[in-house]
Length: 178
Image (cartoon, rainbow, N blue to C red; front, side):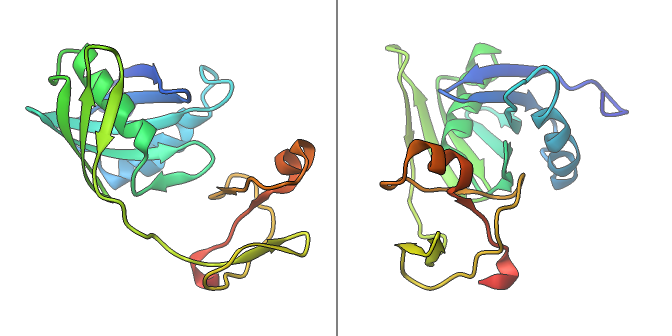
C-alpha cells in the first residue's frame, strides 16, 4: 500500500525472480522507496527484482530495482519479465519497445515461448581490481572498498573454488573511488 493506492504485482521468472507492477509514472521516488521494501518482502524468501512500468500501446517505460544492487540503468531479464507481464495482463502485445534509463530495447515474446531482447550494447566502465592479491580484470584501476553486503556486486568467475567464490568473490566500489 503506497498511501494513495495499492500496488499489484505480476510475478515472473526468467530464471530469476521478478515482481512487476504497472503504474502511471515509474518515478525515482517510487523506485527508491518501494523497491527496497518489496525486494526483501516475506513473500520473496530469496529476494526479488522489482520493476515499475508504464505501458503506452506497444511502448513500455520501466525502472528497475535489482535485488542486491539497487536501481540500475537496465536489467535484461527485468525487461523481458516486464514485457511478458504486460502481455499476460492484457496491457501490451507480445512485441514491444522498452525504455529504460540505459536506453531503448525491443522485446519479442514469440509463440514458442522464447523471449528475445534486441538493443545496443555500450561500455559502462572499465577498471581493474584484485581479490586475494590476484588481478582478475585490468583496464583502468579501481580501488575496491571491501566486502559490503547489499551493495552493487560484480560477480567473478575464475578458478577459485566454489566455496571461495560464494564467500568472498564479491567486491564493491563506490563512484568516488574510481
